[in-house]
Length: 409
Image (cartoon, rainbow, N blue to C red; front, top):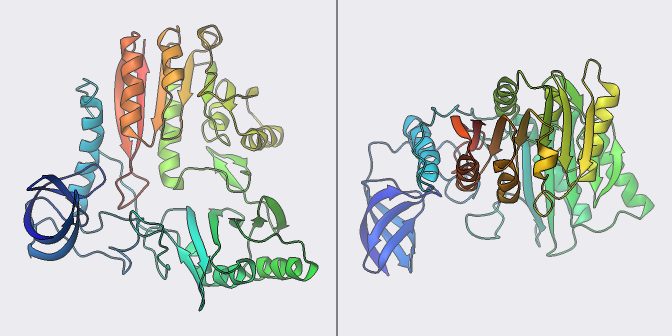
């Protein structure tokens, strides 16, 4: 059904929200106070015509905008965009009864994202490689990207050549690309096994020609030209293939500075959901650290980095699923400060234990304001005081935002 509607506000996913006959209608790529014609199906609408545009609307800078699901807000004035992100964080806390001052968003810059997880599929004519179309599994074949680092975008045509030899018809692969100090670290999953000598040679030749730091296919490292090394607070580390790291090095540096500042007087620190040591390794310059993580390969990367680094305090590692077996109150009470940086689901079980502990300072880092606000509420109910909340934008033009919250007893 085609309706003419007036957009009233922006939703938490960046969609414009209008009031339809049967309730709210979510229309992507629209802005508050705009009058639009849309094809409405239930609570979703597809923009057909912009009847009256907002003064805050600007021209998108990527030709894929509107189809590629990576960006949802290129059409919004950057100043308003940053304030909208700050408000999303404030609203998440307010929904938990916490009216807290949220600092201005530390902005991201175009062309700085160093990690991308792309989808690939072979068609009759070619290989599609890119992000998925918004709210679908359809792949938008990426020809340009204003968010990713130039070195990643430049290698995409070469990766299509490589994938052409690896993909069977209609199969879909996951391609993780990380731009490291040693070059691109490429991890491909979901393709046919490379057990034929000729195909193995072909992959090695591809890797050398494209100057990849490391090539991993279906979990097996096939070629390493140089160690795909990153530095966390000046400490060199080689993450496992496909491992999670912060999306931009610029945002990572901000997060590390915030965490270090909050832990400056701590001598015993626990880093929970530690990953490959983003915070553990810089913190070890100032105090003894326990890094807790359920991914054994990530802990192995920390251990290797510690063996090769100089000037670090002792670092212990512990492999544990903190969702089901959080550190107990007794274990937590050994520490002056605790840092936790969980996946989007948050750290409810761990926050409940922390709320009953004597830990003097807790630093929560999260990419999901909603679960962060829930966990902070638990800590405040347990006697903590929220010191400050800092949003850090490393997901440019998307609805996502990283947040650091510091709490004290």
